[in-house]
Image (cartoon, rainbow, N blue to C red; front, side, top):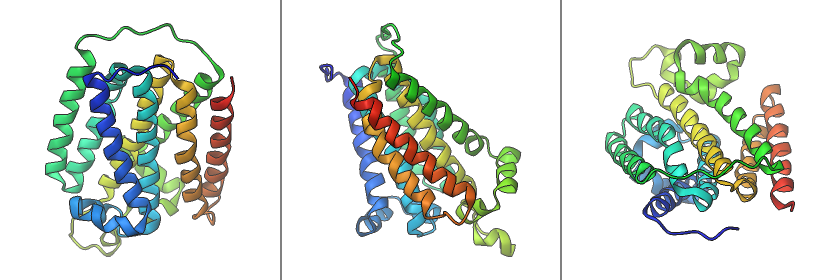
Amino acid sequence: MQSMEWTPAACLLAFKAGELTLSGLMLIFPCLTSSLYKLEPHTQKVCKSSHLLELGHGSHILIWSFAMVGALVSGAQVTCILLLPSMLAWTCYHYSAGGKPHAVLNLAFTVALAYYGFVPFPMVQPLEWTPAAIVLTILVLMQLMAAFPGLCGGKIMNAQYEQNPHLKDQYWDDSEDSGEKTKSYRRARELALGAQLLGGACCEAAAIISGGAQYTCILAALPCTMCGYCHWLRREHKVEKFGAFLSWFFAAVLISVGIAH
């Protein structure tokens, strides 16, 4: 592993990675979830107080935060720049869910990322296509494809519901079926998943560009395994069962290319 310089950009990213990791772990472990809900009451409504949704939400956050750690070690400034789209999407998620103070804080953090990312403008080293970089690139493309419907919403996401009706249990509110006029958190859930996957893809892309693909693969293997477990819990649906095996397959490949010399 290359030596790391604690620049302002690296310190900023380390803080954000720590905050996301803590949030993800608090969602995964039920004994800590209530503490998170005191800080983010809107997250409780987004997750519907369902441990299965909390587990999935937390696992996708860890994909983002672990990839951020791997990327910041190799190239903090590049990571700051590529992270901007996902931070804006994360801001939209908080705003859509009703967490306006969190949206303002995220927007301020995004401005700081932009400043430390572009000032001074980073020098990018030549890209080396190692096996780890190739595998990580495939993962980035898959995450972007999965994030796209959630970020766009509207007809694109409705098409997903038509093809996979079981997704309604995860994203729709009970009031949508009953016709009650209450606040819907469906769009917030879509944005949350889209932002988390986009964040992971952005950080993994930064790791590829900065030459840190190999140890980012090792870090990404654990949350990838956890996402497979979340899919497995819904294995009565063929799509989810396939998603579980696909996630575990990629976790095994990530470990293999991560430890290979």
